[in-house]
Length: 95
Image (tube, rainbow, N blue to C red):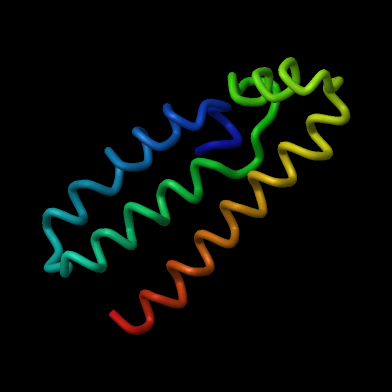
């Protein structure tokens, strides 16, 4: 979602609206539902690129060009998203 849409907010809301009917139909515990929310948020943070306003905010505030922003900001938010998903995956094994 995030890669094709560009916006973290739009991809988060879109993914949540797609998953919501399955969550309502399923018998999920509150902690597992919370883990699902964190997983969706983690997925919405990865691969920030030119379509994302956060990309341009970081680029302009730090005085970086597009290549430098891709090398720093995009890599950093991708690591944050992957670590978040990994933590949720490990926690979900115990829920």
